[in-house]
Length: 120
Image 1 (spheres, rainbow, N blue to C red):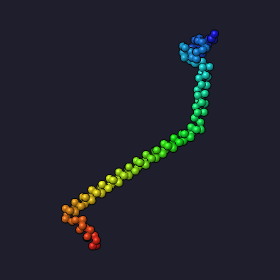
Image 2 (image 1 turned 90 degrees about the horizontal axis):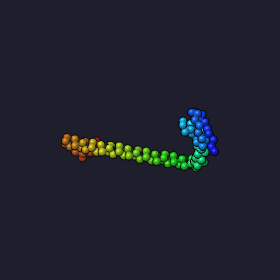
Image 3 (image 1 turned 90 degrees about the vertical axis):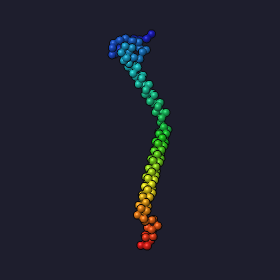
Image 4 (image 1 turned 120 degrees about the horizontal axis):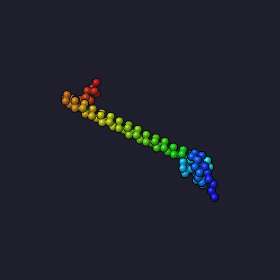
């Protein structure tokens, strides 16, 4: 036979087998304590499961992430340097072509310039 409990919040009577008052939802002190102890036990089990071994796994995971990040940054840097170098190389070729065209328009050939430089 179950015992009757009087709710501290609303004053309604209900059976002690219920964890909460069916009228207002207020938990019984025993139910609150049991819920707290259940959560505490879950936390304790989690700590046992994820003890020192999990710290090693976390360290390895962090090191792997840092290593991958370093590789990504290195690749991006190499690509950026290659793009700048290629762009500068292309600009030099275009600049040299324009110089040669200007010299041709003035009637000076590249061979003439080399001879004049060597004679000096």
